[in-house]
Length: 326
Ligand SMILES: [Zn+2]
Ligand SMILES: [Zn+2]
Image 1: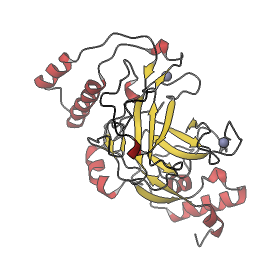
Image 2: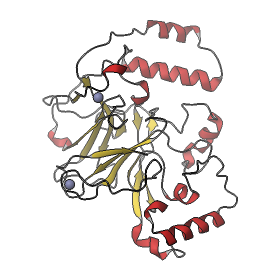
Image 3: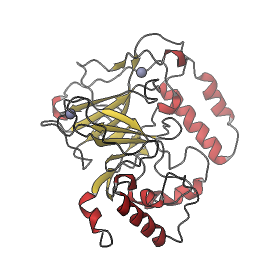
Image 4: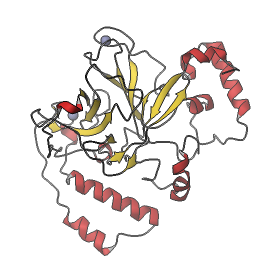
């Protein structure tokens, strides 16, 4: 900040959510956990036509998650399935393919009391995000739905929500508790004017001669890597890469939208040990390069390990959200 006073007015506080596998209840903030959903309100379904071609029979969500955990345990131990595990796998029954709308899946439930940086509409204290567990042809991402609620107003909670008859397994989040942490972020270098951008890039390179950035792709300049937190988060900046920075104006009123929620395929890059929380560092090292470890607590993968960013209009909660992939 003393080196680049121009950056001071541009900083934003983001809230990293730090999801970790657990057994959240409807009263907890969670990723992929159960929602505090009013029994009287219809569960959201996706009516889009553009996932029909990919639909196939699948096992129940509970079985899919169990299978995934057994697969990860097998891989990390470098062994075969045990006889007991095989028996469990054999008992899992495939369900027939079904027509019709697809029940959406809980992605995030965030109580304002737990997550700094949320700006609810008046009277609301709970944000719920669901998605249709298919990549859709129009933007390559699962379709999302957002709901703001007052938790106290929900007295009759839906106990047995519908689940999708079919889904892409990579889009079924593992239920996780969250452990929010606020961090300061700086704008992506693409959002800075040219001369300042060059100076911050040069300065950053000079500060970190000992840091190994060999695993970074070209698009991830060290400045951007250090200044924008990876992983699931609220607010903050976008690590642009698939497109240049763009204000993504609100389709209703034209106001530039702002990042609300980043849905991330990874919490950090497994080959670059930066941004790894202290409490996860030992587990991260001992897990090694096998998939399904501490850097992938939610087990979701948005199209080739990308981030899906939900942006909202700061002018009105009534205006529809937009989403983009980076
Ligand atoms: Zn859909
Ligand atoms: Zn708007």
